Image (cartoon, rainbow, N blue to C red):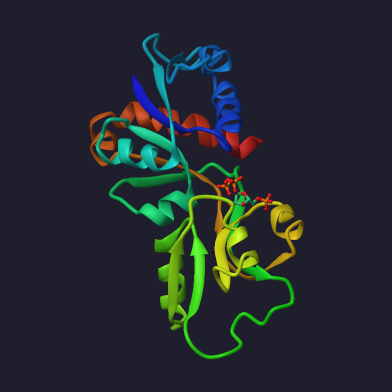
Length: 217
Ligand code: PRP
């Protein structure tokens, strides 16, 4: 059995659809109520009867924690969280969905680099932000915000934000624009280091099913 941590929310439904298309019975997940742990037996044609996924629904950062500690063998999580948290695990598959990007954004029409002194950046991703500005040799002060980061430049708290942009609607509807693209993001499959060795055949069979599906769809 493979224990898989799946990020709740944005990428959850698409991940469940893919698992179903790969031959897993996800009916417990389709009718989940407030449950957090689900058994998803493999019902596809190519395997032994005890082939099963146990799926744990968790917040993105916790998916990484569970996989890193070996509590879960594998996880589906966005590259945004991987870039922010880092950690000791294998990142083995780009799942190709949950596509968006990290961008530097701020008030529309403003010259972000104008003027002297350091820049103030509001973000949910302080590590990504620090690394980005360090790589560009730009001094910045980072203010950690928990959500609706777009408010920060509007309210005058920051010169800009580093945040996720998917459709761009949130920026547009709030009079903001992208100044620079920082990195592209999609959902990834990560695997615990020890699990990859100890359950190699099982994990490879799982990854093969998913990559085969992704290749053809
Ligand atoms: C994310 C992100 C932006 C928005 C971008 O927020 O922080 O606010 O989505 O999407 P768009 O480009 O399609 O408009 P999320 O919905 O996760 O909520 P939060 O800001 O409260 O964290």
